[in-house]
Every structure is written in C-alpha cells, then in structure tokens.
Image (cartoon, rainbow, N blue to C red; front, side, top):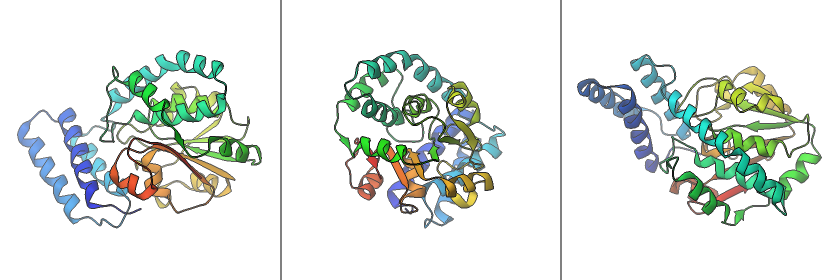
Length: 281
C-alpha cells in the first residue's frame, strides 16, 4: 500500500517524539525538525509508509549519533511483557480453546507499539489487553493451524519488542521444527531485533534470523539474500503488525496477517474498524 496524506501526522509525531528523547537543545531540535519536515515534503509518497519512516529514522540516528534511540523503551516493553507471561500461560492452560487464545494474545500483544498513534502506558496495558481479548476476532484462527499442519516451512515476521513474548506463546502451539522467526536487521523505533528475540527465548523454540533491514516493515528489496531465500521458500508466512501489512499486503497469497488495527488508513485498506483484532489470510 502507498503512503496516504493521513500518514503524514504520524511521521511528524514519531519524529517529534524521537527528537524530544534525544535532543535537549531547543534550537537544534527545531533545526532537525525542519529538516525532517522538508524530507517528508519532497520524498516520493508512492512507497509504503515504512519506506518514508525508514528514511526519517536514519536521519535522526545519524544526526544524534545514537544507533538505538528507543533502546530504553524496548527494554521496558520487554520487561512488561515478561512480567505478564505467567498470567498469559495460565489463561491458555485454562482456556477451552487454547489455540485461538494464543492467536488472540499474539494479536493483542501488538498494542506494544511506540510507532503507532495509540500508545498505551504500562499501567493501562492489562486493562486494554482484557478489553481487546473480549472483542470478536475478525478472521478464523483455526485456519492458521490447519495450514500450519500441512506446511514444512513457516516464516514468522516479528514486529515489536515486548510483543514477541506473546508471539512465543503462539509459536509454542505451532508444529515444532517448522518455524523461522525473522526480526529487523537494525534498530528502528521499538521494532524487535536479534537482541530482543534472544531475551524472549525465541531461539529456544525456533530458528531466528535477521531480515537485514532497518525498515519498520518488510521492504523485500531492502532485505538480505538470506531473508529473501527464506521468504521465497516458506510455505506459509505469518506477518505481525501494521508495518508488515503496509509493506506486504498484496504480495503473496501465502501470507497470514495478524494485527490490531490502529489507524484509519489501515482500517480502510483492510476493511475492518480501528481497534479490531484481525487475522487475514
């Protein structure tokens, strides 16, 4: 999908938040903000939103000499998610339909997103999780498991730090030995990298690879040859979050998108209301 004019406020908000974290000097902050606004105005909007976001965040990292501006945010998200695991596992153990609940939890974990407009504080997260889990799931979770049983290679595209703890709960339900878990190749916003995957213990249950790209999505032309080979050979691809949807929608019928809808642009494109939990084959 291409960048829409409604995407621009999100680019500006992300840039403003990053500069507020990284740049104390008000004059320098204004100079960088003006530079970023100029980049937004002159760059090609025909690409997906993560193409623009990648460009802006590269400028921010270079200008501030900070390779991972959201490191502390990611650490906090991982800590929060890790602290919720006992409760989540108990919910799955007691559930009449543990597989569907694992899918719901993986999608609900997508709330842990610093890049989206609908940021939620750590104090609010349990309440929002409970509210989200009470909603109807838009799509059939069991179709995912039926397809997984009849495939030999599953590629699971991660989204955010913290969220990947919830992904682990779902991967544990998938056929063992089939899953390759792909994370970002470099820091961008709060997206999960290899370090986050190791902390969440994903390597204990799946092969973990980097996609070789620092885009907040999966821009195939920007990924590594190893990743593209895995992408091409996979019988089934599970793609988490809006960034992966923005970059991969319409690319392949073997992709299963799992996300919470956080903005009107995605809602319009995917055909589901803002706030809904979606699994789309």
